[in-house]
Amino acid sequence: MTKVAVIYYSSQGNVHKLAVAAAAAAEKAGAEVRLRRTAELSTETVVPGNDAWNKAWAEHLEAVQDIPEAAIEDLEWADAVLWGTPGRYGLPAASLKQFIDQTLPLHMRRGLVNKVMSSFTSTATLHGGQESTLLALNNAFYHWGAIIVPPGVADAIQLAPTNGNPYGVSSVSRNEAGNVDDDNLAAIEYQARRTVEITAALQRGLGTA
Image: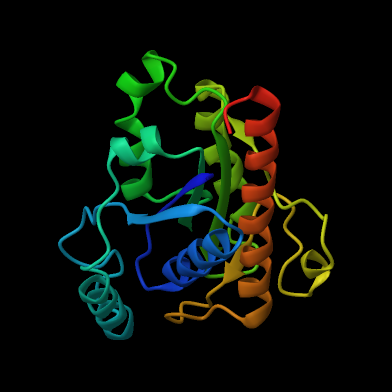
C-alpha cells in the first residue's frame, strides 16, 4: 500500500482545510495516510492589532491540538508527501521551513531520494505569491532527489476560475478564516489522487510496491 504523509502549517484554517481534503482523497485512492501539522512557532498572531485575525488564529490553534505534530519519522515512513503552507511574501511559512531544515540527517543518508512530493498553498490575495511559494518549496525537493508531481493542467478542475495554478492548488483567503471554495477542494482532491497514482506507478516501476 502506498504511504502518504500530508504535512502542513496553517494559521487560520485555510491550508488546514485543504490538507484535510487532501488526506481524505489520498485515503480514498487507496493510500495509508498520516495527517501532520508543523509546530506553531509564535506565541501570538503575526498580525498584531487585528482583532478578527487574532481571534481566528487562536481558535484555529486550539482546534488542531488533536492533530499530531510532524516528525522526521513521518518522512522516513512516507512514499509520498503532500506539503501545505500559507504564502509569506512569496515564501513558505517559517513553521514549515523550520521542519524542512531539520531533514538534513535524513537527506545525508539519501532517505528522501525518489520520494514523491507535491505541494499546495493559500494566500490572502489573488497575486499574493502562490507560485513563488510553491517553487521555493520545490528547491528543497530538488536537493533531496525527490520526484515532484504537480497537478499541472491535467484535469478540467484546473480550468475552474478559482484554480488554474499548475504548480499546486492555491486558494485565495482574502484574510477570511476557512475561505476555501468547492473548486479548490475538488482541485486538491484531484492533486492528492494524482500523487497517489504516480507514486504507485513509480513503486511498480522500481519494484518497491
